[in-house]
Length: 301
Image (cartoon, rainbow, N blue to C red):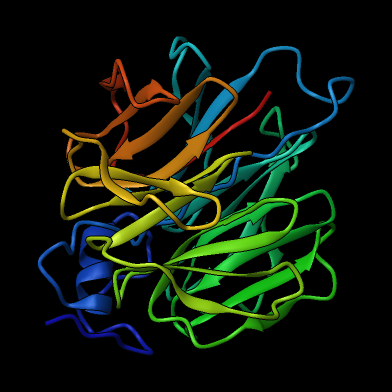
């Protein structure tokens, strides 16, 4: 039985390094090693603004850093950005990288330049156990696990609304496209969907997931990580043809991201980033190794 607490227990320490212990106090379930999961949507940016070399980013919740590597998996830097506090979700656009600090003691959205400079761990405050981040051209969205809501703010961090969407059940990953917001309801094993303005929320848009966490979306499909099943699920954008075993063989998969050719996911169980073709073939569970409790994943370019 999973339980949720509004405040940490006495044995939890506020240093962010003890990600396993902190989560054990918070959620009280057998996967206490996981610092809750987030993800990022695939964001398309104008070619003129995109960085010259596409990159992949991930949240190392075990060591409180954001990692980075080339999109072919080379030159991995596990400490690209430091000083986070149990980072979970990651998102990226043409100028910045964003992540959530889900610690009881932080509850913020962080931001930095794409080169890792000008780090602001409190770019957006007032969240409640934020566990997923996504972007469109004007807004930033996050899942408030502690409030069962989806939050939203302007892309510059102003006008934060912690209750854009209510009624979720332990929301974790979040993704966005040109018309809808999607999120994973860990509590009910469903994927939710709503209009970008928060209306017409459907908490059971896709059912049958197995402890879903990360969510990603492209022009034709929605993807999610089934943490307990060790699979990546996929469905059409209208929610039909859901396949809970689109990619198999993952180890506690959490965050998910897509670009125009590949899908990526975080294997928390093995400390790796996995990769496969968009059709699910040629899956490589060890595309990038050496991560420390990786959770959210994002790609640029």
